[in-house]
Length: 163
Ligand code: FES
Ligand code: FES
Image 1 (tube, rainbow, N blue to C red):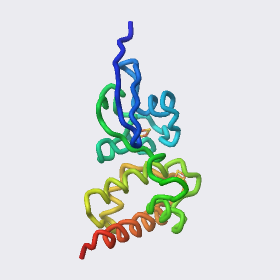
Image 2: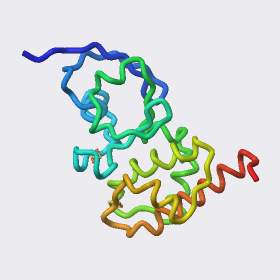
Image 3: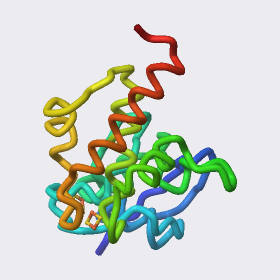
Image 4: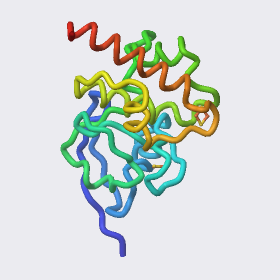
């Protein structure tokens, strides 16, 4: 017999209360119960990063967490980045730098990069590639993704008045 858990979670500023099977993965609850299909499923074993979300501001892989673990916590998915019709600056940087092809990996890269920016660091080049090593892309060869994230991090640093 499966056990169930009551879950109250804030996602993109909206609070949801759901009863879920204790064994269900967070990514499945986001996609199927809350209808947030922007979080993608790839490997389901923590390798590809397509399912990356922000949990209390930290990038985590939602295929490696149970939904019951996020009770009373706050999540951001890719749907929470744009404001109305205005792209998030990082989404705009991806657009400007042609940082995607099929787009399957893109939500994961976006959330990982937002988490980096949230730490107030301006990583570039090899250091940035290493930081994003948990996100895989099989289309782009990574060059334009890195370019887009570099642009965004520089812009975010400028907006903070760093350096
Ligand atoms: S689907 Fe979660 S890391 Fe690949
Ligand atoms: S753009 Fe297709 S997997 Fe990255």
